[in-house]
Amino acid sequence: MSNISKIIVSLLFLLFAYFQINDSNPLFWISLYMIPASLYFLKYLHQYKILGKVLICIYMFIIIYVLFDTSYNPQMLLFSKKINEILGLTLSIGWIYYIFKN
Image (cartoon, rainbow, N blue to C red):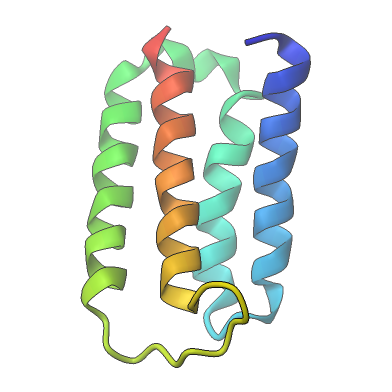
């Protein structure tokens, strides 16, 4: 993947974070999307591959929590809020894995 593509993906995660401003818990969700957005720009973290594994485990735990949380209301047009959050977290895991695999 070229550097331009990596910057675009990182900026996409910044956009995901921006979309969380009107969420019921914005600080939590904005911080979850800011982490993958900033990983490419913080290249010194590549030395700490254990951090990538820890982040992936944390995100997987949050997916499980969201999956079994029953307080979600179906408000979205295309997908439910729960599905949107699970997809976003799954994309975050994929990006974290990609950044730390090298």
